[in-house]
Length: 513
Image 1 (cartoon, rainbow, N blue to C red):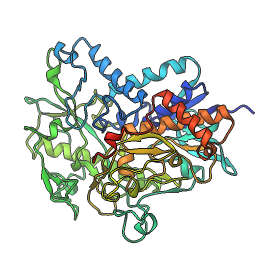
Image 2 (cartoon, rainbow, N blue to C red; image 1 turned 30 degrees about the vertical axis):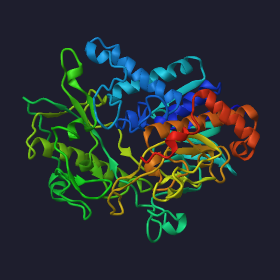
Image 3 (cartoon, helix red, strand yellow; image 1 turned 180 degrees about the horizontal axis):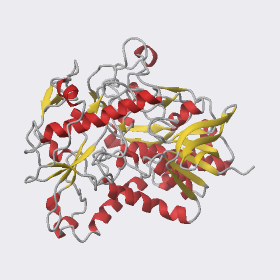
Image 4 (cartoon, rainbow, N blue to C red; image 1 turned 120 degrees about the horizontal axis):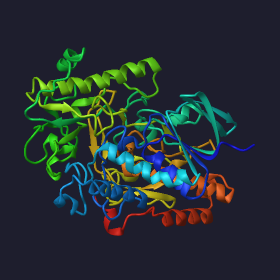
C-alpha cells in the first residue's frame, strides 16, 4: 500500500525545516507538519535570536544554515527603508544585538524559511501541513506505521517509511512507545561530574521562557494592565536567586554571583542584549525593538513537559503572566512607561512570542548518548579537545548552558570544546524507522545545554533528513548505515556534498568555549 509520504517530519522548528529541506532536496516525498501556523521554532515562533559559535560567518555550521543567514541579510538589504550605510555592511546585524551576529526580526526570518522551502513545494517533493499536533501513533513491532494528528479537519493519520521527530519536546516518542529519557539523569547512571546527585528526576527540567518584544517610545506611555498574579511575582524570590523575580538582580551564569545589568547604558546592557531592530540603521530612523529573553522571565516554578494537559496549560499561562508582570514592572515601578509591546516584528497581536521557548526535550534512549565526559573541558582535563566520533554527521560549539531548573537548582554554565554530532545519537535503541531530528537526540540533561542551540538543532535535522533519504535509496535501515563502514563512508560523503562539515579544523578543536 502506498504511504502518504516517504519521510514524515513532525515539527517545523529549526531541525524540522532542515530535515524537510535535505530529504526533499535528495528526491524523497516529504510531509512536514507544524503545530502552529509558522515554521522556524526557536528562530521565529519562540522569538529567540540565534546563539551561535564564533566562526559561524565562515565555517562551523552547515551550508544551508549559512544560506538562511545570508538570505535574511539580503531581505533586509532589499528593503528601501534601510539606510545606505547599513546596506553596505557585509555582515549586517539588523538589531546590532550583542548576543548574536544576526539579531533579526522573527517575521523576516520566517519569510526566508518559507522561501527556502518554496521550490521544493512547487516541485511536488514537499507538502507542509500547519496546525497539525501529534496526538497518537500506530506501531507494528519496532516500526512506526503512522502518526495521528489533531488538525483543523479533525484527527488525521499520516503514514510514512520514516518518521523524524523534530518537535520541540520530543512529542512523538511517548506516542510511539519509543524508549526515552525526561528530565535529569542521576550521576550514578551517567557518571557526569555535574549530573544530579541522588536518583534521576524526570520533572527536574530547565526553565522555559515566554519571550516578548519591546519597542522604545521615550515620549509615550504604554503600560499594560496589571496581571492578576502580579503581586505574587513581585514578592517571589527563589532560594537560589539573588533578588526578587521582578527586579534588576540576576545571577552570573558561570559563577552564580549576583549580577545586575542596566536597561540602557554602555557595554552589555539589557536593551542591546537581544535587540532585533536597531532604529538608527533605517532612513528615516525607526524605533528600536528588543527581544526580552532575560533571566527575569525564566519560568522555573514547575515543569511543563510530560505532565497532564490541564497542568501544562495552567503552567504555560503562568509563564505568560510572568512575562507580562515583568513588562508591567518595567513600565511602572522601574520607571519606563514608554516601553511598548511590539507585535509586528513577531507577527503576533500582543507582542508576546507565538510559542514558549522550551529549552529541554524528551530525549531518545539512543545507540550512543553524548555525555559531559565527551565534550566538557573540565571532564576532559588533560585531553584538550572533545571526543572525536568516527560516525560524525555534523558539528557544533556552545557552552554547556543550563538555566535554573524546576528542581530548584540555579544556573549551570561550564566550558566545553567544539564538538561533533554522532550518528548514533540520532538512532533509537529499538525503533527502526524513527529518527531524532532536533533536541530529542541522544544527549543528557547536561549536554542538552550545548546541543540545543539553533545551528546544532538545524544540523541534527539536516542529518536526519539526509539519513532517511539515504536509507531509502540504499534499501537499508538507518542503524545499518552506522554499523557498516562502507555505508557510513558513503553517507558521510553525501553529507559533505550537501555542505555539512563533519569535523572541526585542528586549530579549533582545543578552543575552550
